[in-house]
Image (cartoon, rainbow, N blue to C red; front, side, top):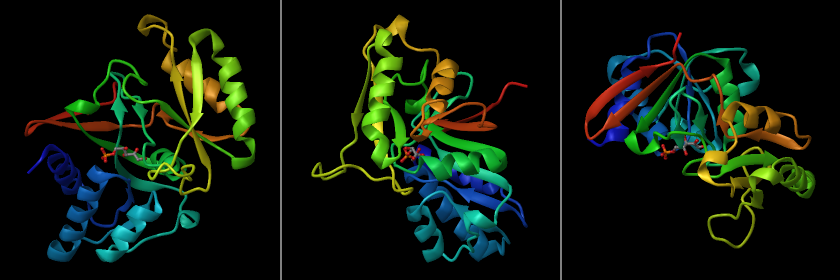
Length: 235
Ligand code: 5RP
């Protein structure tokens, strides 16, 4: 069993009868969906699921998990998803997979948000390994790009439109938005403070959502070569 499977199976063992469970997106979330479906099939676990993307919804459907559409939800019991980066205060960077909007909605709606990572996802600060994905209204992408570059000029902020996987067009999210990948060219000790950056991004018109998840994770399940660690949000 690899580390992604280990955290996914551990999270699935915490799911209880009657829960509404949010399904994340990505390779780790896929292992979780598979294990949840196995528990439903073999143990008669009775749950309903809410998908964070078209991809996770189709996977859940193929495995026989009953789905509830987002518009029928006002809260969920548990949301389980991977992340691209996790900082020491459990702030996350997400969105490499273009599914930010529904992911953040489910994370916010959940009584518990369990994040599944391996050691490679642990960082000292958000943005250390990946650009910050900023989802934008298609018609507003140039205006948002200009706002980002003006707001973060002093830090060497640069935002590039994300290409699709084939590199022959632009990436379109499952919400129908474009993505600007934001990087800071300033030296390491002049990188923006994450909570401040989160607020700045929240205030730019035309930004639909962005990949910084502040104060949303309840628990991080982290595996490192088969060793499992559970990191809880500080009280
Ligand atoms: C998608 C995400 C994923 O959870 C994140 O990219 C991690 O993916 P993986 O589990 O494949 O490493 O945020 O938007």
